Length: 177
Image 1 (cartoon, rainbow, N blue to C red):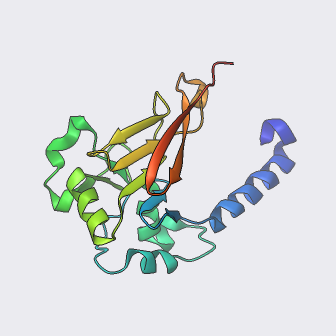
Image 2: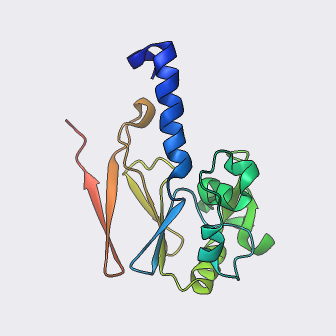
C-alpha cells in the first residue's frame, strides 16, 4: 500500500482493507457437508454445536487472538504433516503448533472425530503454500487449496476448488504466463 499510494494514504487504505477482514465470515458451509475455513479445525471441545459457537464469534472481530480463541484456532490451526505424525494420539489429536508459534496442529484422528461430531464430510482450507496449488491430506478428508501463484516470489502454482453436490473438484490454474 505504501508503494502504491504513498505512506499516509497507503496506511489509510491498509487500515480500511483490514477493517473489511474484521467483518468477513470466519468459515462457510457448502452443501451442508463441506466446511471451508482459513486455517483448520478447533482444538476446543465442539461436541456441542460447532455452528452455534461460530455464530457467537463477535463481528467485527478486530483482535481474534484475545476476543475469540475459538476463531483464532479456525484461522491458525494446521494439519499434522507426515513428518510429525508421532503426535497423532496425544491430547486428542492436537499439539502446539511450534512451527508458527501459535495455534495447534491437528491429526487425522482429530479431523475424523470433528467431521463425525458435526455431520461433515470434508474440510477445505488455505493458509499454507502448496507447490502444486493444492494438497489432499488426512485420509482424503482435508483439502488445502492455495490460490496465490508465485507467492512472495516463490515458484508455487495456484488452484481453486469447485464444491458441488458434496463432491470436490480441483482446478489447477495455469500461471505460466
